[in-house]
Image (cartoon, rainbow, N blue to C red; front, side, top):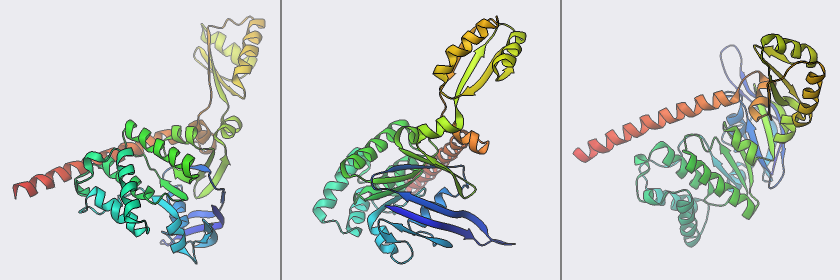
Length: 338
């Protein structure tokens, strides 16, 4: 579905160019669900825009759904769905009319477009908004409409750029249920970026991590967690002296009355650690075992927490949505008064 070799993008800048994407290689098979992770500014969105023909590549080549991104951009666009980070609907249009127009753009029959629009309106909880103008919607409501627009033609390949940012938990759950159903029913290939690590961990069979324009990891979530992070074991002791003695005996880091260490197959390591401490007559108070997360993987790869960046990104989006809502309400009030 996607094949890229040496794909790159350099933006002009004073004193030389800024290389946003560096010689990107990628193969995505039909039916895969691939999560593309990385901090803000890593090059994720630029990569998606290259693959969807919204930006011209500076170097390299790529085919998407069998169409060359340079020679046949129209063919790429006919075959894919793309849900970007910005609002895509016309502000003066009504929600249902916008969906009907989108279906017509893709060549769907009037009958099929009506049925598909009604299906998406129901599944994305847009029923009460169907006849409202887009400019009167909240940020989260606009996001759900963007998603409906991207799904109207049941694309073979769906690109999602931060699709659930700004949505409440219920809307996020509904969105992912619809996407999973779409994939199960039609075999849709999905390529997404997200700051919600639980989405990538639970939904994606394959996780790619990009930093500074380069892919630095590509594997299943389980394999990445096993190979790069390791399980976290925390051992508690009555005194700092006991903790220091334990760290010297079994390894790990002692801080106060606790010792932490990372290891593979932590559930198997815990009994051995307990027996070793007992043999050394170092009294143990308690032990906890935590399996690694994708944020642990990202921290091991880059020294940064993607979860913290994602939370800041979500907070900024929510603040922007609130400001947009206030502006829309003020404009609506002024229009009504006039």
